[in-house]
Length: 397
Image 1: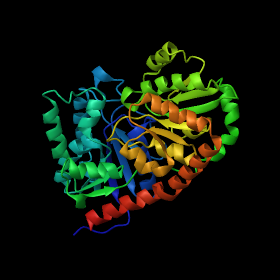
Image 2: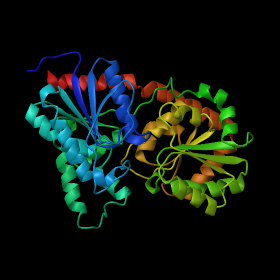
Image 3: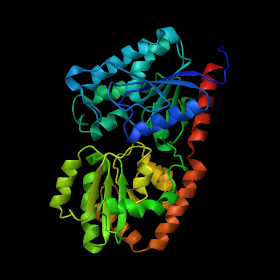
Image 4: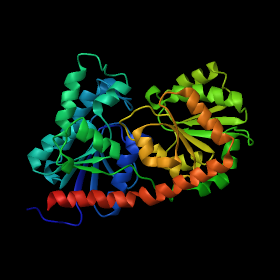
């Protein structure tokens, strides 16, 4: 039996260009921060590229000469990145961790051999189906001959860890139903939010920022924060924006994120939206995200993926913003009856839902306050840190 300690040496594997201001990076960041806050020693091993974060120990792989700028998305080059990641993990032999906490399936790939070598538990932070994400990124054809081998690999990786954390209840159910993972291994720990940082009080100073970005003061602002990509629904959002501004010309769309800014700016131009859409590009998290969101009156989540988490919803909720989203299981899980939903991919319904909220500020404000309360009551990173620590203790005692 291992010694039951109050703090642990955690090797956290982040198979991405950590840190960048989007998606899974936020979960990795906030989990690491709360674990450090609770007294654990956390070392994050990640790809060569990425932004360092004050207060976190980050160790990076060697660079890959032919792909120096890699940051986002599925790619065949990730095989080389993941092999380098596994090699970097192996370099920790002289300071063996108590726990390996692996994010994403590539993290399990890199961490499992070390878990066997050092005889330490492997915790898998599952944030969605690997093969589904590869399909979303158009890296894998669901009808192609490669799909089944990748699916078999995913099933194998799902069965290797000693414990699995999921970013949503839906993801936990997916592991049980589709991948037949033992229920006793799975603990849902949804994405959370710092409600003190993402606070509606910031709206009081948003007028100046709107002026700086050239957004007319009289316009109601619809805000989006996240990656810009087709599987995120960015193109559909712009199509909905055209219908909204045609019906309500005093509406402005604030689209915050990257990559593909020029691509979607050209689409907005083609739709005649030049005077109604502002693209900010990358917004730093968490310093800039709350301030920029404070400019919005309504938030949107047009994400189409049915398996990935959607942490941006919690940022919106904590800012007391009413939210229009495509009706996915994760959106329902986070927002419940207080979200406004449209059938996935239905641009007309999405636009109609937005117009209805724009026309009813009182209902919009009420929904925003209910979402804020739901975020405060249910989604605290301190709570999540306690849950993760309990799982570590259970595995080591």
